[in-house]
Length: 66
Image (cartoon, rainbow, N blue to C red; front, side, top):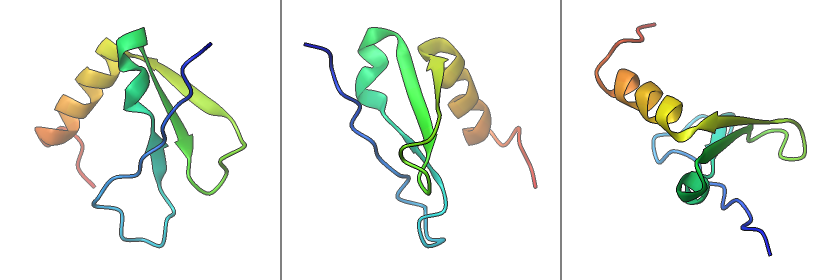
């Protein structure tokens, strides 16, 4: 049996649900899937856990500005 993704949205999402969802429960398998919450049956991007960790650390440190 394969592990199914448990999709979550950020607690900071206050824009009516137009955001991305992530399934961090698969990180122990080496991947982090990400999808558009408006299109749950659409494509899913699969990131390596190290790439995802680097991305999240960069967001938290303010490397991406609007």
